[in-house]
Image (cartoon, rainbow over the protein chains, first blue to last red):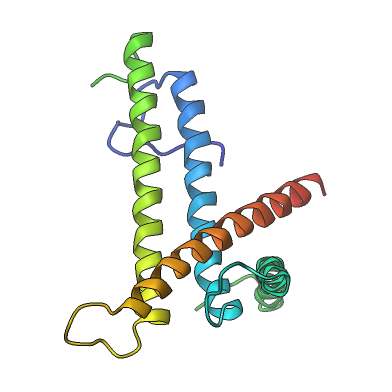
Length: 94
Length: 87
């Protein structure tokens, strides 16, 4: 993520470097936040049956594992799909 | 607006605004998800006379647990990101 697309500013207009740096950091922060919401959505459904008076240790472990295994799954699928596409001769999806 | 020639005050204002918008967006997202999840868990048969006592209690508890879960997952994900970055 080296260049930031600040829509509607015109290609060759110079953007203040400090502002550019700031926006890149904030953009990343927004992406992380969105990802946390998505994990919470998925893992809530997987791990929580009836909301009790506190999260018990079993539920906490389930939530932690859910996040880590989801990321593992994402990495595995990314790598395997890349391999499959390479075997196809790099022609991509057609 | 010319983003190349902002005074430092204007820049500060812009940054503050961006941060505030981010907080608002994040809160709205949380509100939406929480409502959806807790409605699903707590209102099984929507009654004709508002939410009954046990539904309200369930919703309050559900909100608190959803926050717990959000905070826990936030920590776990941040830890994982740090670990992946070090590899």
